[in-house]
Image 1 (cartoon, one colour):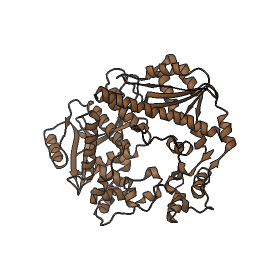
Image 2 (cartoon, helix red, strand yellow):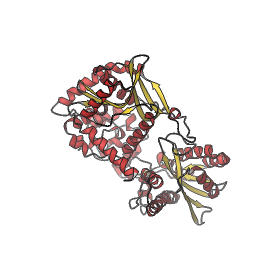
Image 3 (tube, helix red, strand yellow):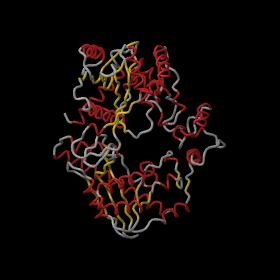
Image 4 (cartoon, helix red, strand yellow):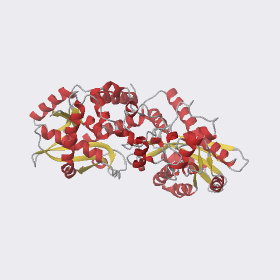
Length: 517
């Protein structure tokens, strides 16, 4: 079985076990975090798990779980004498008890149940000097990430459970990836990971978490689920069971209005007035200058085109024109020397070049197929393909710009060139993000996949084997590291080249369509 297939199978098994445990009457830490997000989701996990099982993990969710597993495996290397509990649930609780009776000092996946609660501790460590246990919570995040509330809730739930199980907990630590780490040969887990003492934070929130736990127990015992309050949140904050709980809400709704999450009172007013579709919003209803155009074109079928502003933008573009797109691989644990955790490592680019208005459109490209760092050969090929003058058109210059900054750090002899490319960027997406062109079928998005079908309907991603960046990253990883046959690798390479090429030809054709305005 290939590595990716094995990981995906393990992820799905872990996911299904988490929503249908043997201890169905207990609240696991995964259950509790679901409760903190949405009590309705939690109730369904405990009372109708079959409904939750119907909702597949997204590729992004699988990636998050996979990265967490990988980081946890590295964290265990900090404790070479640790013992792993390989069983699950009732047996795992018994096996943990046996290890404690044997005075085992470090236990991975130590499992406890008490007072209707259940959890596996990533790394349970005995502090001999202070005669207490240390709960180490491992997360596949970086030390510089600010929002850690869900990490604290997770760790505090475990601390409370262990204390209910008569385990003296004296310290709680968060183990994360060191954002400042750069791979240089063999990885030392001491350099890769950072421990943060969060015991004080646990004390500050413990009473609140205890109250939430007691309320979760009451919710679980109810005959009916509580109202899913996610209907008052923007789309990207909806719980996994939103469609099940709110089947009357259309796929494209007021939740998709641009930046509606920053206007919670406005969204609540819409929901309370039963304005679920954007077409339900009265014409006189006051919206922000960013939201109003999207709602207007949806309600009227008008198309907003600010011709003067678009022409002004396009006049900034100078020949030769280069249309550039990268595909990248962000590994939690750096694979290549010189890279840091979650660095977006470019492994591919497509470049279309137009030297003069009526000139031939020239296509060049690069795809790393060798099992080593792609950054230097990719940068060198880019240097050969892009001259020193002219505009470089991208879609989302923040992303491509950061890639070039990292390339410049890795290939210092090309730093001047790469920084110069960034200075020559024109972000074609801004014509749409600035709302110089607004169409109802964009549905509030300025992504190239939203814009292309409207401006260039003859081009489409739908028939491609690789149809988005996430899939490109996934199949490149398979091609590089999964031991595929030569023919399988060739097929993936061909599909990757076809996908990335479409990204830049799409920019070319959108640019041409805008010129006709």
